[in-house]
Amino acid sequence: MSTDRVPLEGSRPRWTAGIQDCGDAPAAYPVEATIVVRRRRGPESQARIEAIMRGEAAPMSRDEAAQSLGADPEDLRNITEFVHAHGLAVTQSDARQSSVKISGTAAQMEAAFGVKLRLCRSGSQSYLYYDEPLSVPSSVAGSVAGVLGLDQRPIAGPRTEAG
Image 1: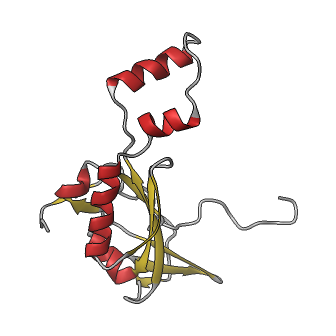
Image 2: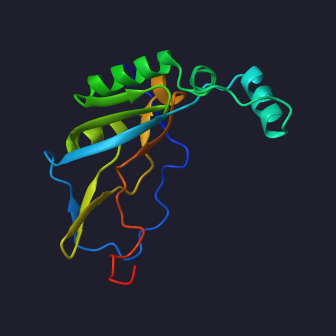
Image 3: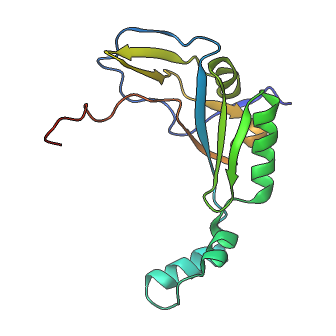
């Protein structure tokens, strides 16, 4: 496996204000994440989408959309090999949704994505986050559009009776 790593575009967390009570995530801490796989989008499918949007063509069937816009099976295979090489498990792989759901430990995720995961606590809530951009081996960099689930900082406040 190649040791050349490529940072994932847009994976640097932008906000860190107010993060408190954090430490390194325990190595055995269980983590689930979703790898977003690039969608196939050749010039023919792009032209068809534009024609549909202009009202000049009928919508695609679900099967046609999955075939022309879903993840390439070769990308899914390469990502699955990358995941398994880092001891992670594939819990779901879906070409139509262009995603691969994975699970493993914090240590395995750190090795796979080249980051240090931090575990933070706020009251009774715990969440993960990282400071540096995620990276993947160059062999899968072109196939990975993003990784969800390694930055779990809360976006909204806790629920109240009113909302």
